[in-house]
Amino acid sequence: MERDFAVTTKNERETIDLGIKIASSLKSGDVISLYGDLGSGKTRLVKGICEGLGINNVVNSPTFIIVNEYSSEKFGNVYHFDLYRLKSEDEILAMGFEDYMNNRGIVLIEWPRHAERLLPADSIKIHISHSVENENERWIKIEGIEK
Ligand SMILES: Nc1ncnc2c1ncn2[C@@H]1O[C@H](COP(=O)(O)OP(=O)(O)O)[C@@H](O)[C@H]1O
Ligand SMILES: [Mg+2]
Image (cartoon, rainbow, N blue to C red; front, side, top):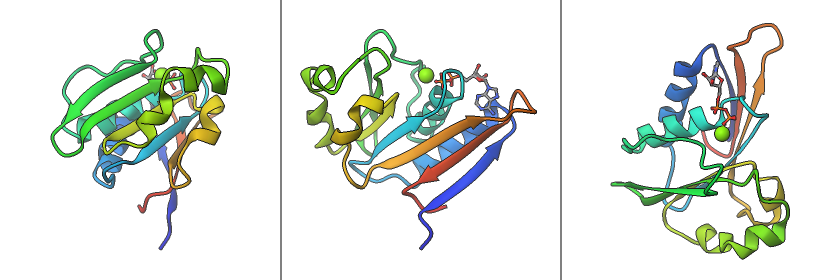
């Protein structure tokens, strides 16, 4: 079965809708890392995933607090990390990151670059790129879940 797929979205709403769709494929304990430049749409996609999980609180980038914690009926805890400010694997280990990896909830990670070796082998990876021609177009590649 094909485990990778790519989608082009034309506006923020389509990215959020893709997140809702991704949420319906998730299972307990899934770890999802999100790659892409600043402003590419990682947080919008997380917002959609959270919406799909029935979370109604506002979803913002947790840049200043590193992790936001939400609660979903289906999976229990949902953790949304933004590791942008952490500069090494040691800093990430020091904040107890590994405990989140062995958890039955859902983990969403923006800026996972220094956490790469700590991610489970079966983690889901989502890459978002900007279009050059169209300001609001994004190319989103999803590895590790079926379309
Ligand atoms: N197709 C699209 N998908 C997602 N965001 C889009 C899209 N087109 C324009 N945008 C805008 O791009 C920005 C994405 O912001 P955000 O999700 O916070 O990015 P990141 O978390 O990757 O830094 C928002 O201002 C959003 O309105
Ligand atoms: Mg963000």
